Length: 81
Image (tube, rainbow, N blue to C red; front, side, top):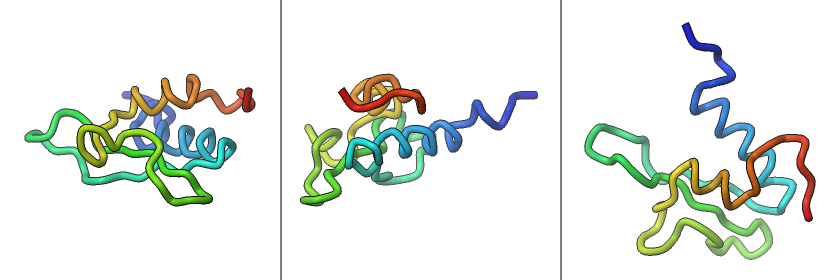
């Protein structure tokens, strides 16, 4: 059995905390299903509400791995640079 800490939901919660420290919000476009294999997330700026990542070539086109890389690894101990 896998740990709850390894689930996508737990990972998304960790990434949302990291994004919040950078004044960003992770938006989820649609629930993943077998027909859509990539891209369900987008980052928006909290102040302007404009998308800053995951909106090209279409809205909600980023994967969780891409969001994690954009945020700088997604570790909770990290601080803004």
